[in-house]
Length: 195
Image (cartoon, rainbow, N blue to C red; front, side, top):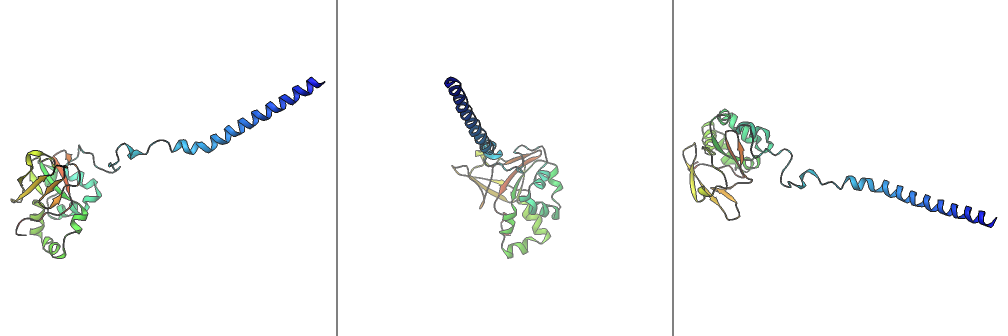
């Protein structure tokens, strides 16, 4: 009789231990599921500087179409339309020194009033346009001048840390290669001499 009670007692103890282990395992699993879901790295971890809406560096679009896809160039696209130059950027081969929305906002009131005159708008925008391809980090243009469609030259300086200066503007990102040219994002609107 003692053996049966001993076996029953051992079975109950074993069952209690099993239930305890299964319970702890179940609770641990339920608690850890959200942790495992967060284990996988976010989209931008492998490309920390790439935003989801960022244009591809080797775009199959024209310069005009690539600019239209980027909100930070909304003012530039508007100004190019007003000056009748946007369609020019759908054909031909150009390098565009592309000021951002913030660059346009940084113009002084006097500069902006003068810029708004139609003949000045076209002149300033053509000063941002170069015939042919010029890569922003191209060492061959370092310390040289590039002639714009407007006729005046822009000084190009490439620092040892790869920072690109175009007159007093800074190139903000690596160049974007479009189907018909190159877009170099800059932080200032370039004003031609004697503006």
